[in-house]
Amino acid sequence: MSAAVAVEDLAFTYPGEHHSVFDGLDITIESGERVALLGPNGSGKTTLALHLNGLLRAQRGEIVIGGLVLDDDTLAQIRRQVGLVFQDPNDQLFMHRVRDDVAFGPTNLGLDTVEIARRVEQALHDVGAAGLAEQAPHHLSGGERRRAAVASVLSMNPEVLVLDEPTSGIDPLGRHELAELLTSLPQTQLVVTHDLPFAHATCARSLVLDQGKIALDLETKTLLNDPDLLARHRLALPFGYRS
Image (tube, rainbow, N blue to C red; front, side):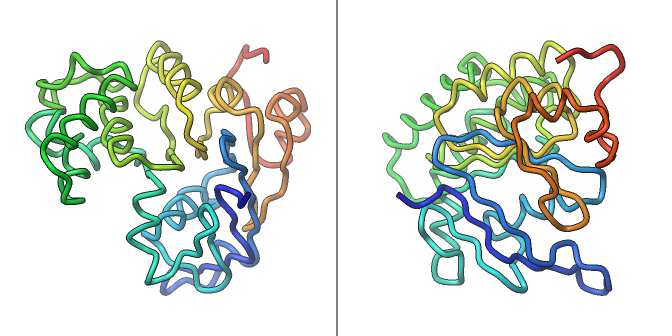
């Protein structure tokens, strides 16, 4: 069986910059894993997330999703397989009703109305947001918008979920509910976050990205119990937190 996500020798530099974000990055995530991607600000976490479904393209190296190499010929298929949940839900919710946002992707796949309706209902059910279907996204709380954004990705039936800072802008109860949601979903997940307690609640394994490389690949609990290791990579737990 191929890994769900394999990144090999990835190199990328933004136009006009001299410093590479990555220069030889390697990552493997097995099917069904939930993995946290941690690292200091500016370490390239979001840049990597954007590479995994082709919004950014590698300048060297290879990205393989479920055995399929990402290139011009496979880009459309991989974008269906890798669902990216952006840091700001407003980047994904732009219709007048939540139902229409969740239906947007399946509609653009050219599916028939019965299948679109089935996918919408299933995705909203899976994220516990069936009651939000007729609501306007801008009337929702931060946690509700996050659920609706996840549903809009799930309706595409992705095999991999990549979530960029999913706890941004939501309150402690919303974070708890989101953690329960993610751990209930069967998809392989890469959770890009600076929220170490959330990483602990959702992901048994953590990757620490620092200076363009994976500096650490270890159990999340082990990382959180090592203050010196956290400090070495400019990571910190909230005051008073005990893992």
